[in-house]
Image 1 (cartoon, rainbow, N blue to C red):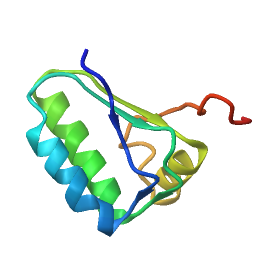
Image 2 (cartoon, rainbow, N blue to C red):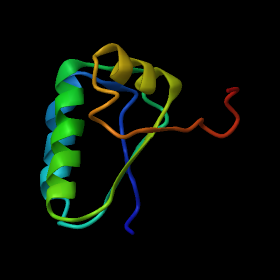
Image 3 (cartoon, rainbow, N blue to C red):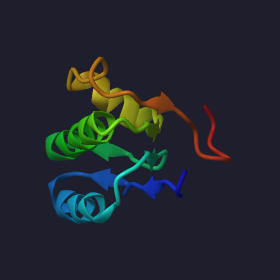
Image 4 (cartoon, rainbow, N blue to C red):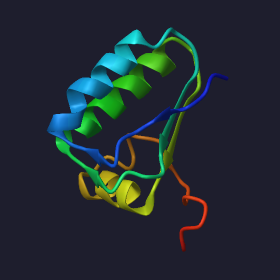
Length: 96
C-alpha cells in the first residue's frame, strides 16, 4: 500500500479544493488517509471523504481513514459515523 495522504488540520471549505486535487490525481488502488492531526471537519470535507471512500470501494480496493478524536467527533456529529469508516488513532505523544 502506498503512503497515506496526510489531511490538513482544518478540513474545511478552504482546504477542500486542495484535497480534491490530491484525491483526483491519486491513481486507482487502495487509499489510506491520515487524519490524526485534523482538528476541524467541515461539511465539504466530509463530502470529499465520503466520495473518496465510495470511489475506492466501488473499484474493489481498501479504504482506511485514521482519525483524531476531533475528526471522529465531527463525523459523528454530522451523522456520518455509520457511513464513513474511520479508526480513532492518536498522534504519537498526544494523550488519549
